[in-house]
Image (cartoon, rainbow, N blue to C red; front, side, top):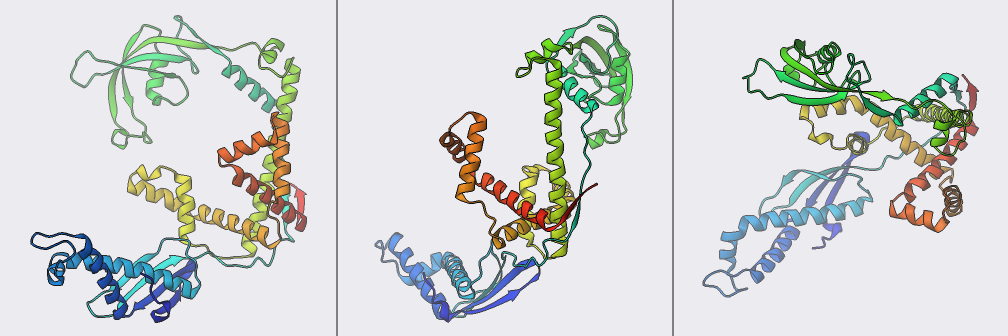
Length: 420
């Protein structure tokens, strides 16, 4: 069915945060015409005992399928009237329409309301004149030492040890039996790294007092932040046996270790490369801090509201499978995240508006140049990189990255950047 939009009565209401509501009245004759068309199609395809297919009397059809005809008519008329009303009012929803206040009576006009969000419209009158602080992020020898230590740990081996008591950082193998339960001789085996928070503190303390092969009975108390709320603060009697422990054997911090990692020939070369990488990370952090400050200044200088549906969609992308959480926990998370999520949505809209208003969108030439740069660094052809980006649906992300860089370069030129 295609409704004549000129016969509809349509009123558009503007609500808060870019909420719009269409109040629509569909004349009774249009509703009855749609119902008759649906009834004819139904009569043509059904077959009832005693009647030839397509020749079921109208009275019988109404008696058997009247309710279904009404519902199908209602759905069809609302869908088509909504589409015609949108075209007539020249509005473009960005969220699903919420139908309410439906009044549908035989031989009477159909009325309904449908609410939805539209794209925010706002002007950015101030984009510069701000003073932004570049944070002072330094790279020192201690940070390089930490990275070297992590590399040694990643390339370490675990060696069994039957002597002495375990220490934090050891991998321990234990058997734990709950003494207050019915004695059935069953124990539960566990293996974990001491000191990494994989067991409650009382259990780790108990294990630290044992030697390999030793058994002890302990009373442990579950901490107040234990995952299982029912166990919090409760005591439990456990029998713990330390069946084994392994200690970490770290490679020596020498040139041979550095060479084994590839791309460097000595520990001095490795430390130099690590420092260079850390300094690049520090520069990226500084740039990120500057960008964040600039965006916040622009958002605060040009206040506007955003639709709730935009905030909800972005929050859903952050939470992922959080809908599997209990409803009260999910509601608590959403309430906590809502302010920052709304601000993030505003930042995204501001970037898009500046890119559009200042003609800063990534061009085909800039995209080709970036792909050639990636290809050169990766030792591939531009065609291979392009195909990979298309295959992994990363082309849009690359375009946005180029656009955002241009936007931030523009914003930085409009303000003063000072070292903290």
